[in-house]
Length: 307
Image (tube, rainbow, N blue to C red; front, side, top):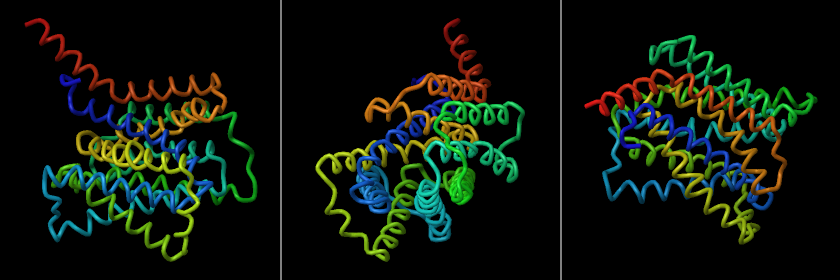
């Protein structure tokens, strides 16, 4: 691992982040019926904020220049408040499989935005990788996507809002990551989102929902806070710090597939051959988009071995 180039390590970090994000969806299913959606999100983000600050502060000061504060905080609100709100509202109107399919368009939008602002070049390989990943997710979850109903358009629209906000964050966060370390950025952005969600929970008066959480529910919250929260969020931000946003965004297509597989292992949901084929397709898309990086890494290793 230590000999791998940073861009490839970043892609692997993004893949791990999305896989953990899929497991967080499974853990959320334990808590939401007891506490509700927004209180569950608040617990996840508040806990992740505490852990990120506890990890970062002993190592470096969490300082952002006054002129950069609106940008960093604003990006935190986009990714850790606006995105989860759109995502949650979508799931109130459409099945998770359909929502995941719409979310899987994010790599293509991220690539389009990155090319528009000159962050990276629009290439046939990157477009093909995004299309292949989208098709793989659609195939994997195709047997779980039900027909349209009167509320479907609302769910699609909300998830499209999540796609846009996530894509904008993927591209725009690079401006903050050019100036500040990923740990510093995460230690500011995640608490910003947590505060925003807390204000909404206070306004809606949902505090009593916390008393309804059972002991297994609190264990799920602990997982959401640690691996499903702080680790997941930091890995994603670290990946954006070290490689192109389109390469990172492509890993989001692992999220619904890993959630379905983990749901089968933990919740006894069925594992179908379509899921396995879809997972293979997503992995193939990741290899396709990162093929040039893989070739360079293999060439460098051969050069070292020949000495």
